[in-house]
Image 1 (cartoon, rainbow, N blue to C red):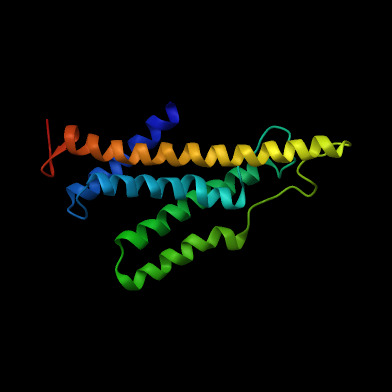
Image 2: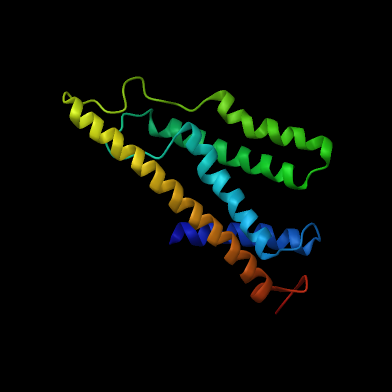
Length: 167
């Protein structure tokens, strides 16, 4: 719940400033697009290098993974913003930003994901891990699309009316 509140505050602030400055006019479809961008920036791009993990996965040190995740989110968000709002010549920089964290590469553990002597246990854990990644992806997609849609609706209905701030 706290993450949803925090992400919605971010979305509302950015969407509101862009609408007030006349850069964009928010609609339900654009709200979905904003939600899709959040999904890409906060889940897809980091997940390509560091997919969600279940307990027991042998991984790189937490601090290294967190630093790469934050870098990836920031750079992906900036790249998506450049693709959406920058002049045509600058959009190439947005593509470079989208690729940059993946060219650097995410930190990974040195050994296998699961270390257990029974191959059946490892196979079961690998299947569980795969199911967890898919469930996380679906849940995050729905979360971000609903968040983007609702943020656009709240912004237009309750915060801004006709591009002007209400009291």
